[in-house]
Image 1 (cartoon, rainbow, N blue to C red):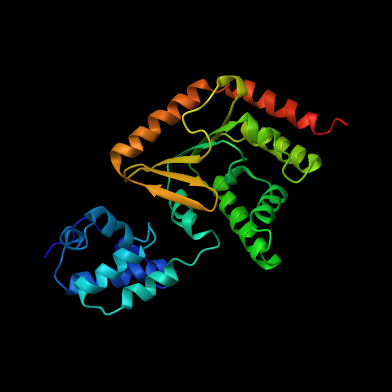
Image 2: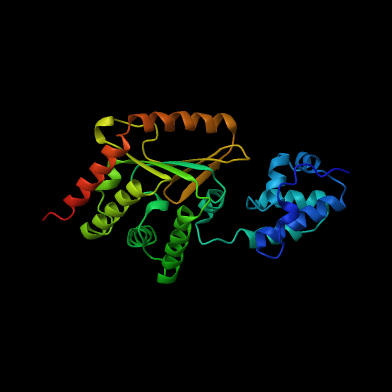
Amino acid sequence: MTTDHLGNAENLDPYSSPKTFFGAELRRLREAAGLTQHQLGERVFCSRDYISRFESASRRPQPEVSRLLDEVLGSGEHLQRLCRLARLSKHPDYFADAADLEKHAATIGEYAPMLVPGLLQTEAYARALTRAAQLFAPEEAVEERVTGRMERKRLLDEPSAPELWVVIHEAALRIPVGGPGMMNEQLQDLRAVGHDHHRVVVQVLPFEAGAPAFLNGTVIQMTFADAPPVTYTESAYTGQLIDEPALVAQYQKAYDLIRAAALSPQASLALIESVAKDYTTP
């Protein structure tokens, strides 16, 4: 028997997290069944790469795939129960898979039409947004979301931080989330990150650029050193992770056109600073 494309699965500590335990158990059950990753992938209608990433804990397990794995491997509901544990997250469920992939990305490109991107939000801005979106949620639920977003933001301080290139529509600068003082703080922080962080590029798509390819939805493009690129799209209370190559390529072309239509990074930072000052003017 061969065990093709193990990745880092052999070196994982299975007890470090529910996700690594799921990966270790999947590998144990697969090898006990005498199946390669490719053979198992064929039986559960996914690629060898997916099986490899589940086993190496570089991607969160999926409920439907876990059900099929239990059926093929004769493991009852063992992997489905582990899947539920591995999918617990401080992020909304529709975004949690994308948040997990961000940690492994080599590059992240984001278009934000109405709001400052999550990776660049201040805590006060994130809290105001979360409270507006979850108007009747208990305070602890709001704070859990804010904590998750701030933890996600720390990714940019890691030695292996991805290159982040964001294009923000001018509308996002002018929607007064939380009031003028909070917006001034957010925009000053955004300008500082765009100016000082060596792995972050910020551009603004001005109103005069006209209608962009993505008019009203957030789009995030992620590339990886050892995996195909993916696209994540989001609108209110829902999101979708896309890995179909032709569709990902189509999104990438549209994102490139938006980036080309945006102001230069230097002009963008100047506009951000100008709008920030507007929030301090009576």
